[in-house]
Amino acid sequence: MTLKHRRIHLFLQIFFLLTGLYEGYHILDLFVQPDLTQTLFIPQDGQLPIITLVVHILAMVLSLFSGVSLWSRAIWAYGFSLFTSGLLFGMNLFNLSAAIQENSFHIIPIVLILLILMQSFPFLLRRSYRGA
Figure: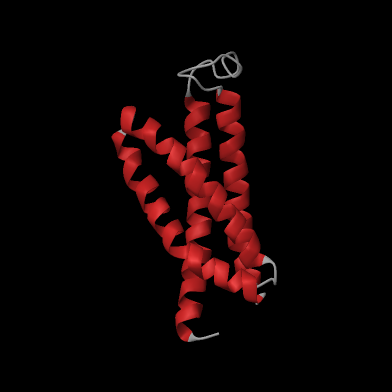
């Protein structure tokens, strides 16, 4: 592995760990809402809060697990990180419209995540295809 690939690998490790922590922040933000237990299955703004909560928990777990698997340099880590990248890309793309309408401060991290994911797709594809 060249020095350039090592730097990208380290950057992606840190990125997935930070993205997992950011998703954890979203989960805490959902729990701060009053009467969450009574409104989990009542549609709000066209979405069920329980589905949003499950998706954020799944994204957090997969992001943290991708960061740890990249750190351990497992053979399957690049393929798993590519899967996690696709999930994060779709989720953040859908959350971008809600962030534009509700809270404009969440646009900046969402756009940063989307840009980094688009830049990392070719690296992860190439590394997952080679197998190591």
